[in-house]
Length: 275
Image (cartoon, rainbow, N blue to C red; front, top):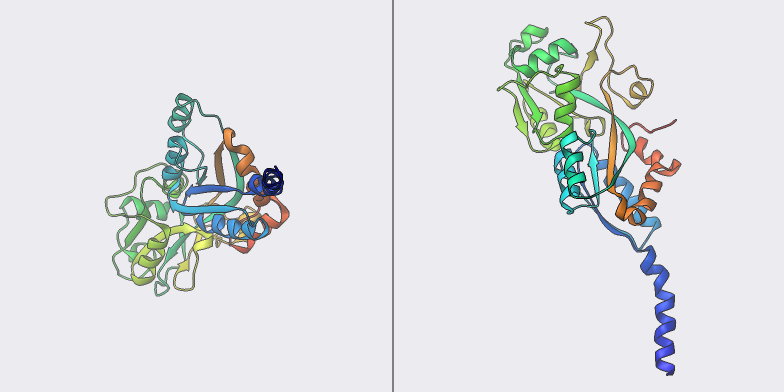
């Protein structure tokens, strides 16, 4: 009897820890990946019972995973599409959408490239395959090697809609499986050009100034220019999760949206919701 009481007391002491222990997966956008990793590391230090797995693969991959039930949070650099919403509805799954930060999409070239700025129209020409040599946009007589994310990427879709004016990428564009692969390829190829989220900017690549008013003004991508909206290529970043697991993921999302979580947003190279 005494042993039974001791076991019950031990269970009662363990129960709060079991309730607070959070184990869940985050999957999807490569753009959001570094932010989710930084947030989960910081959150786990404050919540020792938490176990958070974070992986990339693209926005489409993350959203497909939440539909199939193989992830708990889908990180995405685009809004959920209508066909994805219908699949959720057909599966009888209710979900929530949360904007966790904003991002500036930077166009990058090799540091050896003398070109430092391009208009939206020039970018459209480059990535649709109409402009094939850097001399056509004020650069050296060198072939342009365009790198793009693959079609499952939210960044790919955003770039197509907002930079290419909904035109298709040219057959010259080399589709890469991850943002890191674009950074590496551009850093190693003199004639290369690509696009990445602000958090991926490094010393071995050069971000271009971009003009959306046909060359009157050119603005460089940065947290400051994204916040004051002077940089034209900015977008929201999302978390999607099922309402059925809200109790499990809500403390983490609340942390990401908190002043401390938003400070991490800025430190990691993204744009916080409020300043």
